[in-house]
Amino acid sequence: MTVEYQDHNFPYPGHKIIPSGYLELKHKSHRCFNRRGRSDERKELSPTGCHERRARSFSPDRPKHHEDVFTYFSRDKLGRLHRRYPRTGELHLYCRVAKYHQQSTAKHASDLDHIISDIRKQDPNKTCVVCMCDNGPDWAKSNKTFFYMARLWKKLHLDYLCITSYAPKHSAMNPIEHAWAPVSHWLTGVILPAKLPGEDKPPHEQSRLTDEERERKGIRVLDRAVQLMCTYLHRKCDGFPVRPTAILCKQKELPYYCQDKDNVTRLLNAKVREIESNVKLQALQKEFQFFRAHSVRKTYQIEFAKCKNKSCTHCVQNPALATGVINFLEKAGRCIPTPRPSSFPGHYETFVNILHEVQNGKFQPLYLDENMPSKCGKAFSCAKCNRYVFNSVADHRKHDILIHRHKYL
Image 1 (cartoon, one colour):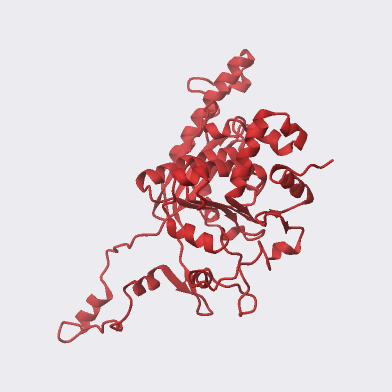
Image 2: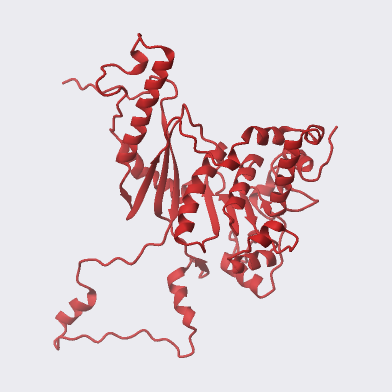
């Protein structure tokens, strides 16, 4: 018996659909299973038909919030408390055709703008966002990623925005990596049509068409394919809905703060004299310096936070709602504290311990990425502002040009 499969390769360049995934972490609600509980089974085994279960003994002077420790915290093998965080939730997928939409930091900023805006419509008090991403080229901790994420932080009036990632070779710990397995399973064996309804050949195999007509029909085919692909993804994953969004080929999706990407690229590659002779670059440089005053960049992390400076127009006109977070950051050096080695060999202090030290006034901040494995390489911090970790000598020079206005001959 001969088995013939359809060609699953990409016969036409650029005809590839790339989904961008964003996992909105949420705690699972308590489920009610349709089964008898253990107490019902004990009642049936009891000779009197009733069962008295020993109540949990609590001390009278126990704090009311102490019960939350068992719900929101857990202990490791060393007996230390750790804050629990969800590892699953709603999956947002933005499907694009690679020929017309290339993956970039501006695209991710646009996607996050839609997701965070929808979340804040339901709960305006959610003003702190942490994005755990990979270390791909479109998520690298570069100046371009910094600039677009800073504009996202300012546009949405967020109190705190953190772009972080795991160290190399530890990306399997990222929760989004576990969400791709069901997506791949759902799309396994799916064949998207390469031709329009009523036609026998794909547009690229029709020789009588002009280039414009072939391009126009090709766009229609790709748009139908993206929309059909999203219908296969309207499912649930781990009890949470999957929300796919089809981005059409000619759809203009970038927000206003991503429209000047050519000037942004020019600024990041310009020298001091070129910036001083161009009005647009000078305006972008001032915007860049404003973002630097409200941010900290580490080797694998970028943080943006509002300040308490009364001369800052943005923070005065848009006061922080998460005052507890801002107060904690101010006491800790306006950023999440650098992990500190603990008394247990091979372990760091937990965030809960550092939080208590900050609240009690016993915290002694470290330098950025101090005692971290990244410091063993080429990473070093700026001695002038101590709020920026460099990855190379070129990165150091660009920081001096844009922030400290140092002129290199």
